[in-house]
Amino acid sequence: MTILLIIAGLLFALLGIIGCILPVIPGPVFSFISLLMLSYSKDWQVFSQTFLIVMGVLTVMLGMVDYVLPLLGAKKYDASKYGLWGSVIGMLAGIFFFPPWGLFLGAFAGAICGEIIAGKDGKKALRVGWGIFIGNMTVLIFKLSFCGAALFFYVKKIV
Image: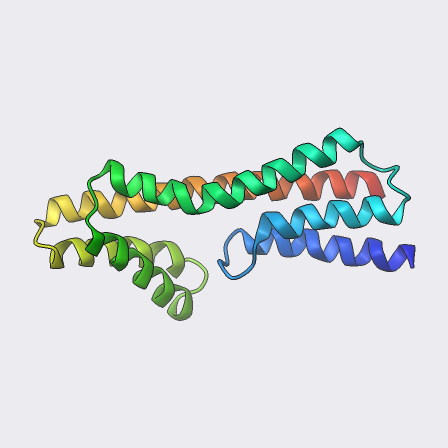
């Protein structure tokens, strides 16, 4: 049973990394679950209680940041509702047609299209697209850092 939990936990940690790029997989959640699985498999002796609490809090915070930061980037660059909707539609279309990078490029292109529909000139529309792109990239960096650290600690404890 222990070896199965360790293998499953490692798969969850790897899924966490993949989930940083694919929006349908909650990467940080899977990474945190992997740490819990390893701890459980070793009678909760692997990681300290403080470590697990901190990682759990970071998981929740990343879940919130994942939604808020791109919107803040959009608002900083004066995005309209059309730009926001365009970025969402572009993101969804991009993930299906050009995975995984279509997610980010689709949001960028969708925001620009939405802003042009809203009547903004090309320069302002490009600026909004850039804001959404920067917000998404910042979230990606945060999520990859967290999931990479979780994978590092996981592997460190099983080796």
